[in-house]
Image (cartoon, rainbow, N blue to C red; front, side):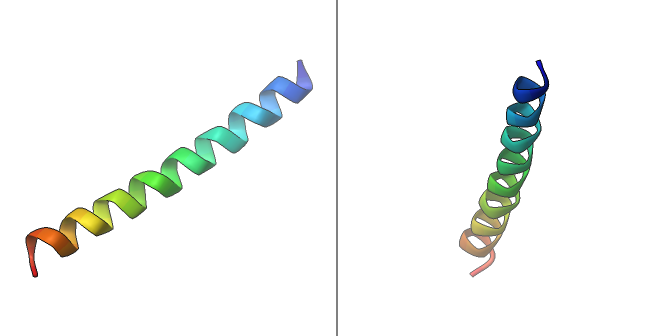
Length: 32
């Protein structure tokens, strides 16, 4: 169970990082 929680938290961090990257990319594309 502990291992699953660790994997989940890692996945959440990756997801939020990807989300930030996507938002930055969209921002640059829209306001170039």
